[in-house]
Length: 263
Image (cartoon, rainbow, N blue to C red):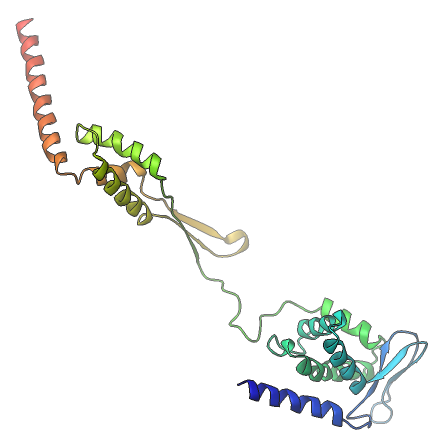
């Protein structure tokens, strides 16, 4: 894989080095601004052109060599080139990581600039590039599948800390079992309680976009419900409930009897 990438990159370098000085293969363009004079094109006869006084002209191969030199020297100008070409759509994310590809793909921008100049464009290459990138619409990446616009689900889990869980379990144990929990029971029920919390999260689903975006929330089970469920699995739960029910019935009978006796 590495050999393939190196070979491909070397081919690009050879193309840059072997370019001829003819206008078609190695065009000379107005690189930076000066006092510019524009000569409009005559269709089918004379191409439009921009001449400058005080400006800078460069050939395509010279621009490409300067990009490579900037990369070799770790010059920040290289990053400027890479970012401009990437944002302008003249290179891809994967190619922008390799200086030889960036230099090669600069030709894509140069060719577009040539067409811009022929059709009456007056800006220098530098000015045109900056303006072109700044005015570019935000497009979906050609390397991806586009932004996701479907429902978004957010899951929130609330886990009670050990000290709080122990205090809550002790309270519910006394209410439901008629006694406190042993140390072994406490450790087991804390784990059971936290596991139940994790299995019953709050789930929020959002759909749509902008002003039409809606959210639906499925609330988590209350901690009281989970605590009651955990403690009620204790073998003493049923016996205590029966005993307290019978005791309540007896106390109710006694109360009613007293009411009859007392008239």
